[in-house]
Image 1 (cartoon, rainbow, N blue to C red):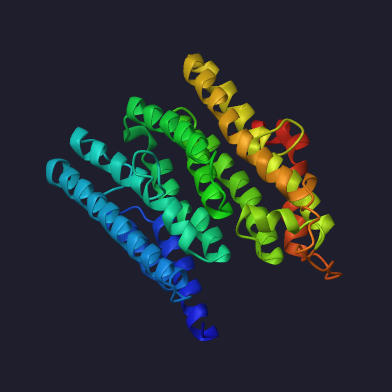
Image 2 (cartoon, rainbow, N blue to C red):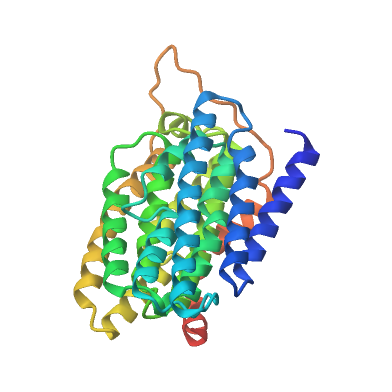
Length: 346
């Protein structure tokens, strides 16, 4: 892609996100979401492969439907109350439609079907943007409208997201699809706590962004998109693959690593809110995700490729690890000791 075009699209992404998260009026928030959608489409379809074109088409149709629902809900609210302010969403029907629209934008169950397909058809860096940056505007809108949303509906969607994200990731061999289902599962954790403590939702999103960025950039540097390739990547960059294993285990939420922190705080908050059954269910469902993270970690480091005559190992590269990956990986694995300071601020 032309560097000037790439610069324009990236600037538009930043502009759209900034407009949405800093707006008070529904029309400006909608305009920011539309700028974001139009800016990411060329980045999805830049390879001109039929799968990439299909992914861009699916993304456009889904996001257009979600934006239309969002505009419709805000107009209905304005019709009944005379308010266009984002925080003044009071009409029950508008709140219900808004919940559906904001669930469709990031890919919460039952509006998740588009996300794995779109991620599979996108390049790894665009996949990283779809998993992290493109989720920030809808999560910011969820944060601003948290008190207007239906808690029962949100909790139901959150538990279904954790269940389906874990269940459907089990038999995948394409790494991008596994990471898509992982993203859906993490969205469940973010949504379950949204009404009770929205700051925890943001904390979970920030830490998820850190860990996912580390995974995607590592996969991009080793040019790995499926499990068989990951099995042979050990000989290419052993240190990088070791760090990938730790980041994956952090994404799974194992205790000594950063990923355990948001899960721990969310379970604690749910218990305080007399939501112990929901906390128990979502904790048990995270074991499904743990299985496929362990599978990825196993393929990345423990499995050596079969020593057959027609098998050729990859050359060991002495290329230094990019500093961005090094910083992100360190943050993805070592932030747990900061939990007292983080929990004091929320």
